[in-house]
Image 1 (tube, rainbow, N blue to C red):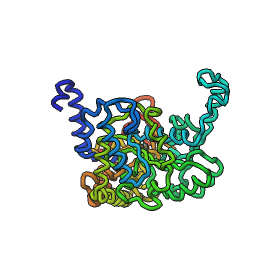
Image 2 (image 1 turned 45 degrees about the vertical axis):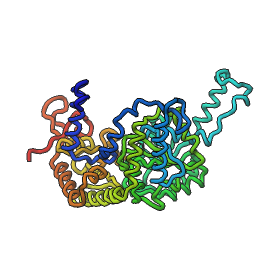
Image 3 (image 1 turned 90 degrees about the vertical axis):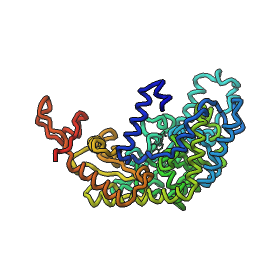
Image 4 (image 1 turned 135 degrees about the vertical axis):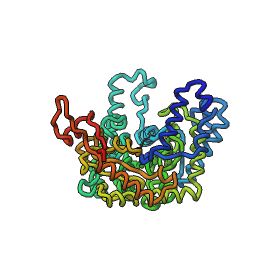
Length: 452
Ligand code: PLP
């Protein structure tokens, strides 16, 4: 940091401030964690200077011997940790891993027409009509994933995401009455749509997914079964999610981030069956830019850490803490979506406190708790304001907290929510409007804690 300060005191100062922030605020963001110092230091080094397009021992650049060694080590550790047939550790992020997986599935299952069939060996001479035909063919491939408002990720076919431009995107939702996945309903929808890809996985679903059942649905309709386990990879690695709840045996292709419950560096990872391995390995350069060798080194370290018995007890404690926190929130009078949680996260409904999610998030942050607002299923407040908060226990569990601390956290959250009220405007065009109605529609209204 001293060296950074000599170049830019501003950046060095921001890094120190971030340390202070992460130490002074309780981190309840479900997708964040604290990676080990070993992981962080393996990332901050000269490996960042190396180009290594291609895959181990098959590169487009010279001088990749050490990167080959690092990448193949990380690949072997990923295979060992998850019991996978094949692993690819290059994706720079979870979104990139999903893009690579989509491309690999298209490449593997949707045959490219040979230009020669059309009497042309040079694609540049194909002509507009043929290109339109080609494009229509790809555009008509169907993706069926969990709806964003039911906890799916943007990359699972959200209308404005690139995934919805690559595919004819459809979504399945949770049951409005229970908030749970309804496998029979998903099966009926899949039979009707016949997607190329059935995608399972979530950013904000607090319950388990039966991947055996989802895999059966995919096979029944001839779809490739893809799982995005970005959120719960650490629970799979730590053997908390096993049998029907471990996606790896059932899915054709599994993507993940490495920085959430898995507690590694920021990055992505793909596991797949042999059928997809060659296409997945072509992710760089056909989808991704050059790999990040320093991050692959850190992935190798983090995956090795995740193979330790300590990591198994860590994963079990995440879920134990999550269940305790959800139960304590309910006891404090905060509604929890689906009545609890089976994994590392839960969704709180803040509407009974006269707040929207954005207000509750701001208020809690002012009181030293960092978490994020999140849409509840079928949320009338939309994705920006929302009616909910998403809370996760991976980071506080890394800090060594347990059930007694979860009870305290629930009590603090409840005190803050109960003591918050939307500001009543006394001046201006909206003077006299009721605070609740105003607060739900106007982002400039900020909630403040009562003096008491
Ligand atoms: N997939 C899921 C399920 C996620 O929750 C996220 C991020 O929150 C991603 C993919 C994207 O990961 P990244 O931010 O590393 O691109």
